[in-house]
Figure (spheres, rainbow, N blue to C red):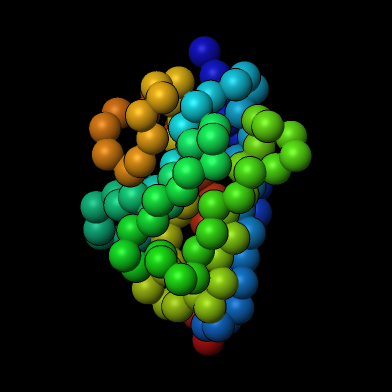
Length: 119
């Protein structure tokens, strides 16, 4: 069993930046971030593989960056130029599968971090 511990988030104004972090208790090959806004379905935002290959949802491209930490079990989601529509609970998820991306099943999930973008 792998535990994912998230940190970061908070309430910010439009145009501001937030960094989320996700630390796994063991090595995983793929980490992804998902978000869920009130009344909406959960959607994938970004993923990054152990090799550093990253993928993004169209809504995140150009603004969000998934980063690997020097601690190989920690990844970050740097979110810049935040918009009100980015508001939601953000979850990191992980799997040992070598296949990375936003599709498929993830084995472990973090507790979630709230990000609220409001003026």
